[in-house]
Length: 193
Image (cartoon, rainbow, N blue to C red; front, side):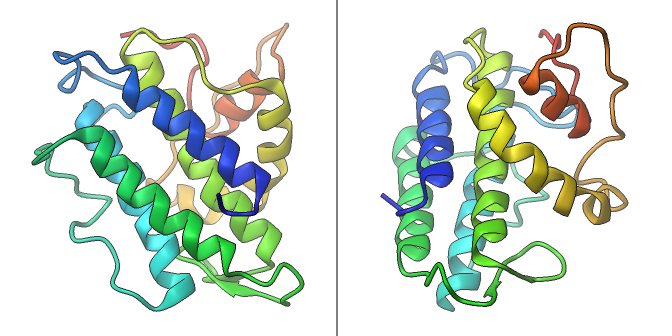
């Protein structure tokens, strides 16, 4: 456990999504148009390792999270768990009262609560990508989306220009907190494979 509820909940969402991928589901398309399920997992795991590396000074991910190969050696759940454990351990060592902590998201230093939210946002949205791609229910709850939306609005715009997030998808009547978050992150809440 990281000591940060938002991270722990988001990590569990990613774990659950990975557990739910069927054996033949790793090459399925995802809401991340250029990536399949394996590539989204590699990206999500790499980002978690990236957060840990910034916080601890340990080595970062072995592969560029923004150019995932689509090839995983070994068990995907063990791969996921190793990344999540590194991230949780790193966040457990963060002083919540510190002025700022180093993070792999511009401007590369944030208040601890914002940095933790950024780490959680990454895990949660990619849990959603994997879940939807493989026919699982959305792992995003209204409570989690409510907590992550202000984080997204604080960090996403500078990243959008580099293609890390697609353009905002216009709101529709009846959108709930989950739909609002997904649309802000450039995802269509009604996406299906």
